Image 1 (spheres, one colour):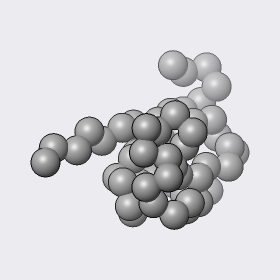
Image 2 (cartoon, one colour):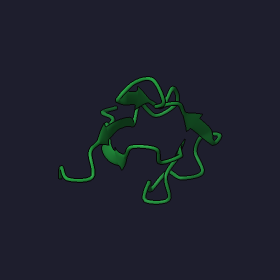
Image 3 (cartoon, rainbow, N blue to C red):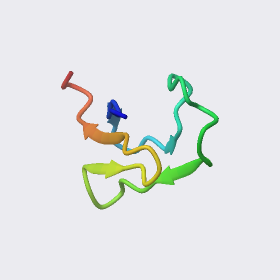
Image 4 (cartoon, rainbow, N blue to C red):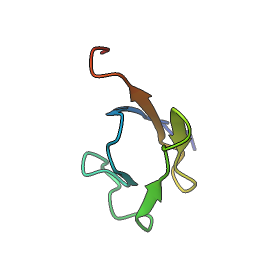
Length: 59
């Protein structure tokens, strides 16, 4: 079974939790908060969604 790993761009200082509402499988794992305070990237331990901090001027 192949799994699509999603990368989500977030703003600095934004509070991040997974699953995000846009996930088709929003109810398939418990909600977890991803700590991005000391790093620019984090990964959900359940679904491997990658969260990347971008500056407000970047796309």
